Length: 201
Ligand SMILES: Nc1ncnc2c1ncn2[C@@H]1O[C@H](COP(=O)(O)OP(=O)(O)O)[C@@H](O)[C@H]1O
Ligand SMILES: [Mg+2]
Image (cartoon, rainbow, N blue to C red; front, side, top):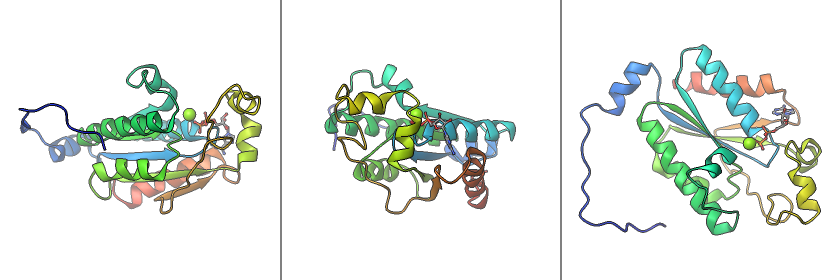
């Protein structure tokens, strides 16, 4: 738990609330939290879902791993503590987007169940949609879109998820896609169907 440092701070109540913004946008703000091994397809899937939603006039925003590590989280590495802080900040940012009425998508390995559960606990029930992007390590390693598995196997990257750092699969994800078995189009449709069924869009 991160402690509150500042004192003498009070919450200022806004005059336009989340419900107003959701009405304006004709959607429900939510977090679609993609989790899975490196190379499982989180980024590919998040951007494909975003494209489809955009074409259906929905406002979205993808928070993607490496991009966030270039800015907001540039002072964090890959130790367990830094991974935890990385996910804590992403969870807080996703919460702000949700409050803005936006469909926020996060594409981070987010290997620890406890960290993802903390992100879930920040937002209203029903607005955290955990998508387990399942894939075998073998397939992810074969894809190796960024050449990272090769480096990890060579010992050039330490604490790499799936190789010498753990990945804890979600126990009760809202959605599971298996990118070993399903095409990108099928996985995209699975996510969109969930959003429709649960009246997010
Ligand atoms: N069914 C599939 N779903 C998603 N990606 C797939 C699939 N089959 C092959 N790929 C490829 O796997 C790679 C996944 O990479 P990426 O989306 O960057 O993964 P991550 O963000 O999880 O690290 C991409 O090169 C993508 O084209
Ligand atoms: Mg990615």
